[in-house]
Amino acid sequence: MNRKLQLRILSGMDWLNYHHLYYFWMVAREGSIARAAEQLHLAHPTISKQLRQLESALDGKLFDRVGRNLVLTEFGQTVFRYAEEIFSVGRELQDAVRGRPSHRPLQFSVGMPDVLPKLVAHRLLLPAFELSKDIHVVCYEGRYDDLLAELAVHRLDLLLSDSPVSPAVHVRAFNHLLGECGLTFFATSDLAAKYRRRFPASLDQAPLLVPTERTAVRRELDQWFYQHDLRPRIVGEFEDTALMKVFGQDGTGLFPAPSVIEKEVCRQYSVKVVGRIDDVRERFYAISVERRLKHPAVVAVCESAREKLFH
Image (cartoon, rainbow, N blue to C red):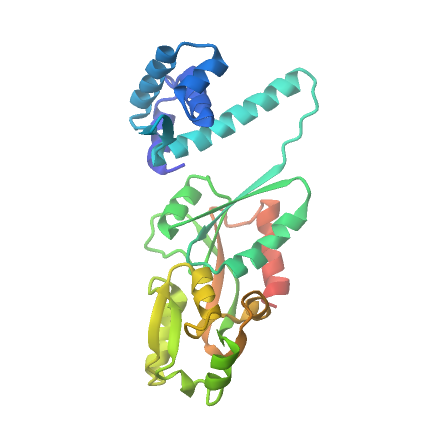
């Protein structure tokens, strides 16, 4: 939940009508007021009125109309996620008081900036899935600043990132270095054979696919090129490094990736190693709101990364 919405709800707890929230939740699930009215055995105008009252109370628009259906706004999606949690706990409460067996799995909510390599994220998160059969992992992807805001209000248990939280950011968060590695360049077999000779000098004027400038590794890479007087021909910049690898797979150019996932990149994208650079380091961090890690999944991710992945 974003901080603005949280403040609205906290400041208005005395007037938040949970009947209104429940009707909103049903409309969001059913996709229309008519279908929700049928499920609730209520009149269409009754639900419409109570939705308007909820929007007024929360001071935000919950739905946009697309054809005959209602589609959640971005604000509505946030409220819906919160309502899902509320009514899920409510069902568990009913089961508990009626003596029905109820078991709630351990939830682990983790955020990842869209610039974080997916193969690295997979390797980092795998220990959480292996922790227990009774764990529910929820992965969110988005802008770093947005995810950091979600972490600050405890909507996330952990934020994985390729850069630490800056001291200038007014968020109480702690950086836990998971490890670091060098950079490997990959290409199709033909390009790899051509540019492997005289590497890294061969990178001069070589067709190159790179992450965008808002990534830490790109900034280090540009500095490394400058120091070694190399001027590769940048043919593509990507926020989504998985898309960058797909273009590299079809021979558009060479591309870099963390050396720690070298085998996975070669296997998944059918490419070859061109060469390695140890001077450019990729660092990965677990960012949390607690200095001492307690959540079992967070502990498992951090320990496995340090002891196995980046050992």
